[in-house]
Length: 122
Image (cartoon, rainbow, N blue to C red; front, side):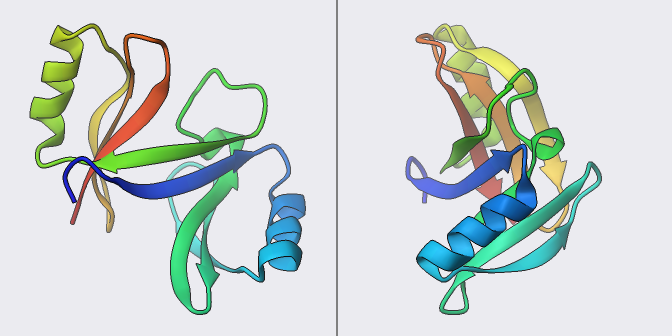
């Protein structure tokens, strides 16, 4: 999975409205997933997990003021890849951390300013 997008999640100001919208338009169902900060849901389509959804407090970008979709790319070694990214002009938004039952995750801004997550799953 190295170098490919592996996860997408929505950080939103109105979780219930977002859940209703995607349930009605795409047929998604939602299952709560425990996280330390706030509430988080996994979205399912035909029983398959397809995305995540949470409030702004659970979002990847701490200074965001509007709802947004966020993507994570799978990498072979989060710490080594973040170090390499920083050497090439990236900045760290959230340093590498372990997320229980998920894996190791970091968030960076590439040299153009675009935020992206890098992840190695469990």
